Length: 138
Image (cartoon, rainbow, N blue to C red; front, side, top):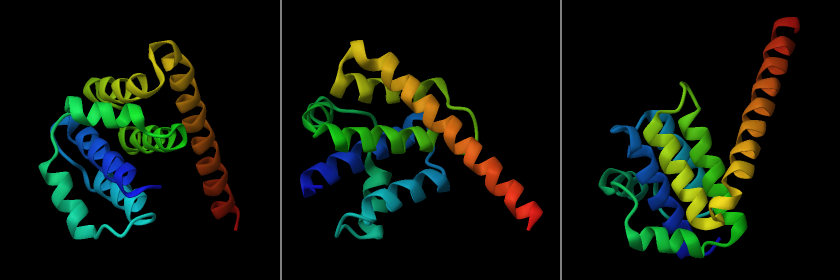
């Protein structure tokens, strides 16, 4: 992923994390995991950027629209795991997730994207259940 695309994803995820008014430890960890794994941006710089981002500016939306499709899909998937990690998503989070997806892929594709995200959450739940069952049986 190009450096500019990483910054765009970082800023979008930071804005997304603030959608409900606070950034949880889980959200901070997911952003750092996603960005640090493919970047030379330090964890301290990521934390600083997360603390300073609020909302999706027109400039940021323009950069999201220009992201390569695979990077935009990764951004959307990470944002979805952030808002469904420990509790149901808030209306603000769902709205921002939709805005990010529609900005990049268009309104006509939102229902397909939402369906794909739901499928991913169900698959993850199934895998978690199987893992829990395996641990109990071991």
